[in-house]
Image (cartoon, rainbow, N blue to C red; front, side, top):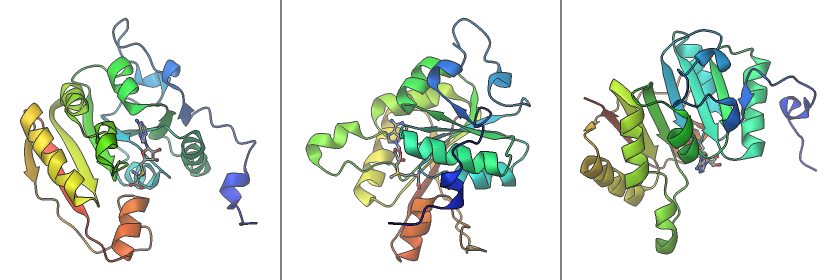
Length: 217
Ligand SMILES: C[S@@+](CC[C@H](N)C(=O)[O-])C[C@H]1O[C@@H](n2cnc3c(N)ncnc32)[C@H](O)[C@@H]1O
């Protein structure tokens, strides 16, 4: 049997400050979005769609304590794992919602609210007949544009070149986001100095990563 890390064994940890479900989020149409439901302090909020094992949330929350980071992860197993990591480090400015990011964006996030949206290595849905399930698609890009504040950033990275090219086309065609801007790349300073686990794996395999940044006017 494979060894489980100590963090996965902690089944009795109180995750209530780090793990949320969509109904825990306020309804933006009937009340002002109160970050106190999720974060202890009001700060600009950055949203990550598809957080996986949560490396981005963990590192970003540490590097930018002046911001709050909210991950949305559809897999219950990964959402719990992320919450365990955040609880383990007692991270006050990051949390995860377990649910479908599209529904959360549609139903729970006010317009002109997010300082940034991050999508890293989204599921590629290789087969042509499945490609409409891709998260970077016209309807979701329009939603992202709507939810960003002016000056807000949209980060889209992937290791799948055709998805990247198509994604840039879609973003440019359906939104007024400016870009793509170049993304500077620096040498990692330690083994987990990568944006996400998928970036780490791709770079360690010597494969290319396609990175883009867009900004809302
Ligand atoms: C290929 S993984 C990449 C994970 C992470 N971003 C990384 O770079 O390491 C894609 C992740 O997106 C999650 N995901 C897929 N569709 C989603 C959706 N509609 N809402 C939230 N998460 C989703 C998957 O469960 C998976 O964890």
